[in-house]
Image 1 (tube, rainbow, N blue to C red):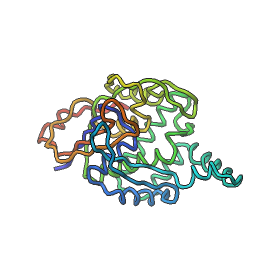
Image 2: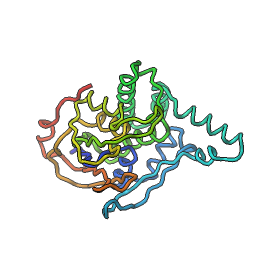
Image 3: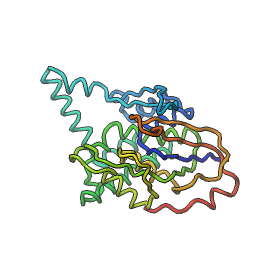
Length: 276
């Protein structure tokens, strides 16, 4: 019987939190490194995982690091700073077609390729609506950087590695306050996140925390992978993965990934058609 997964996002969802939950659930970090190698990014990105505590609860934190970029950007050598600037310009301003080409030529499992392409496509549609341009003309900034490519493709690969065939997701918290990004200081939820919620009619709520709780990458993963949002599906729970966010918050900053097998005949009745 195929496995199903449920993202419990009471404190939000972000790409690195998804990776942490998947490692916590049993996906080897080395497998993600293999995926990076297939994407041709293994010389540019490194991953490491650690056990951290959020409000006293243990969870896995996965760090996505761009090799040498930060060091070169602050270097005393002008040529190093120039290389870092060129690196940033190339990797933070990618069109959708370039990202799709990276994914299609990586020889990924078919489900991983489909999920990954869909996630970036929905993100491009949302960004295009925000800026009033077609998806193909969107310049991916934060969402198109190396960490976002890593987060999206490795999350899809991790779910596939675990044998998950259907994904469900809880309602998502709105957060609040402001966030600094490529386009300046923006209100939370970020415009692309808000657009994705509107496109998919995602149920949202306030948990009272004034921080960015759902990133555009996290929102794209949630809407593109999930069959529906809301209460957990009827399932026999087998594994729970706990992925930590960056900050300490008043409640545990953790996304919980529930993995199990559907109770026969229940999931198909509960699942509703996605909105595109």
